Length: 166
Image (cartoon, rainbow, N blue to C red; front, side):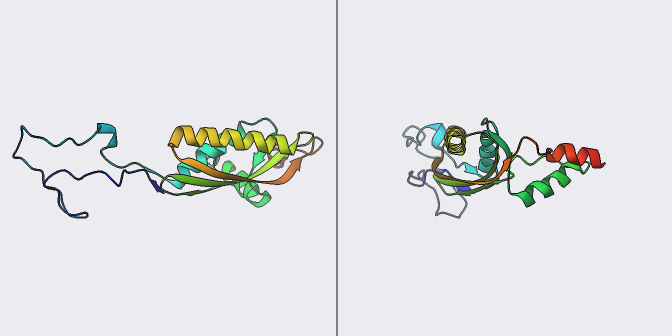
């Protein structure tokens, strides 16, 4: 989980040591110490799962990406999708390592046959970096992409095959 707090800010007068309850200085009302902009007062944390969801949605938006995840995770995901109350995992195939101001991502994708894998990977990388940096304010230091499979035009789609088996 990331913490985007501003660690170098001055504590208000009368504040106690970190970890202890804060006491406010009720005296000296006319000579208040500037606390800074309201937007900088406090802490924002972003969970790894949030970054993974953003990256997963951004990767799926790229033309040429057929699916996300390894074969095993796609199989388990298809079963989970069929269970009543189950939901499709948008973070399938995405692993994020989130620090205080930076993040690194690993993506497993399946591309469609006939597309340029290099171009699809470039487009995925650009789309993911843009989306994550815009929405979280974190710097994306790397996006590693593993192409685990190619969807052939004559292969039945996994979803179609599972629907016929029912």
